[in-house]
Image (cartoon, rainbow, N blue to C red; front, side, top):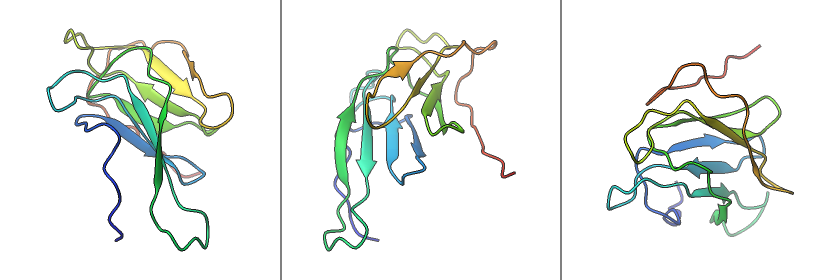
Length: 127
């Protein structure tokens, strides 16, 4: 393994997922002071054949709702979705947000989950 730089924001109880293009998106969580985060960042792998094997990082537009203990997954169209979790008030959330990473990055708000969810998991099943 090649050591990589720290995340832009130290976080725990966040969610992360690997996108089809190899990038890793990390969202939400709690910071070092246990404050709830809405920040999002993407880690991008080096170009194929590059001699520098360090991944690059950049901040993405923030979630519209700060959350921790949420679940993230990649949708079939390549968008990154964040579902449920806890709000800073301790309320369990039923909202979800989906984001395309790349040109025109912005969060979309699909229909809410019918049940509030916290610390849940999503799994992609092969065809």
